[in-house]
Length: 194
Image (cartoon, rainbow, N blue to C red; front, side):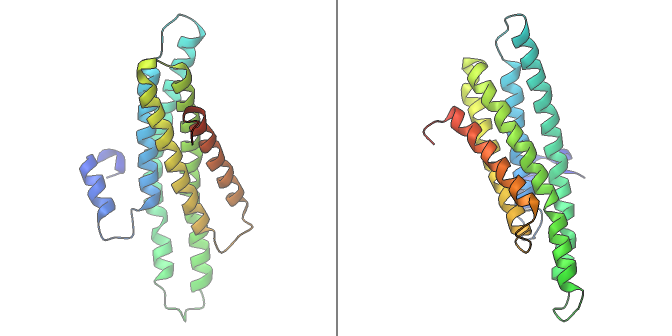
């Protein structure tokens, strides 16, 4: 059963369990899904003025729904991607394949949190637009979406950095930093005081 099919309390219990996974990547994706849901709600209540604003709000709502679904998929992907890391780390230190298997597993496990960060940075930008131009009654919800999305982005980016610590010139590190900067910029749009 995937994350999307579980009751919320069960998700929290699974994350809290004394198990190495699910962990930060799945939690970041779930936070991203929550941020996307808030953005969907804010878009649903965008002012109706007949014309492009209606079309834009509908487009934002549809994109937020798509991003929410993808974040739930990524929560599952992150959980699955960490198994090979644990397996490689569990090999005897004298095993000649241990280091290369661990490096490969860590590199592969950077993909899910990088995808989480890409989605959550976009969610932060989308929600910032809604905070600025959506319903004034939902500014708080849209702002909460921005802040949650930025936090999820930063958490996912940190996981990418940790997973790629053995390869400091990996281009994904630069991509991750850019995603964090985008999410931060979105937050600064709605919370200028930092």
